[in-house]
Image (cartoon, rainbow, N blue to C red; front, side):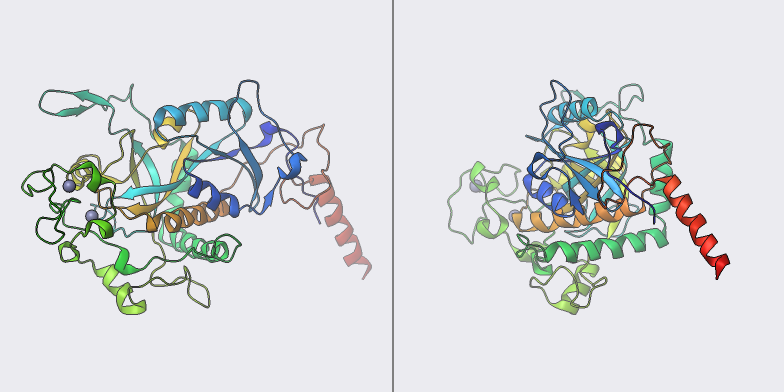
Length: 402
Ligand SMILES: [Zn+2]
Ligand SMILES: [Zn+2]
């Protein structure tokens, strides 16, 4: 059997994972097959001046370095990515993994539900432009905006978005999701329930209601206007009393309700596999910027003009530092109606999909370094070709003797 070893140096890491929230980081780290930072025994250190904190380990057959952003937004993401690149100079793939706002109905894809996963085929920096007196003008000059993914990533995404690979990716995602829910500390990880997946009519805003909740809010009271008070912005739909009759009916959601009811259930069917409520995976362009999108009107306008399927706040800052793919679970519809009950589930589906994604990702062959030594562990990483060859020759020799 071939001898495999873990990286000896930082520059041998090729895959970085960046998370912006603790719930995202926890889900990703829980899916490591090995963690190499325990007790500092295998710490790889970092470059002088790098303020990031890292976790290193193995996911499937890939060594990965995971880092956590101390805040959200493009500027912080850019600083984190630049520091990461100074310490880990061999990074060839950056995965931004976590939660996002989804565009529920879009041109190319089937309907997106909460907990579904979006994988970026491109990034649109939708808040980069000029604010004119009557409108915002987005700059999309090729010299000044983010480019498309490199050839290797485009080719891989094209393959993965095909029916066979996408089906396999979904199956593997469900397997890893079920495994995550069985881990200590993830006992509360459940599918929150189809009844909690609420998409309201775009014109119905998340604000104090006028006739049912007896709250005399002078800001929200004008339902013909768009003004929403600060109190309402900080409340969930349940706390605010948003009217369920204002929801849009969606066929896929109705099928889930018909099959398993509306309440929360385990993330995977009892006998494994893909359930009717299991997340689907959508490939498309993702809008990234400093704004948190909380307006169905602006969401739909940008989705229509830029053909994006989700909104998030990290990738635009990472993009220029190394080739990037965004893998995010949908935790809301970017419309102001919010319930945090989907965050853990969406972070978990994204992390599970990330692991399924890496299962298919192939790194290029590398020459064995002259100074490489076997680290003496079972990590499935670096194949010792001489050892493999010797084993194969011994097997052939034994076969002939029989
Ligand atoms: Zn109000
Ligand atoms: Zn609401």
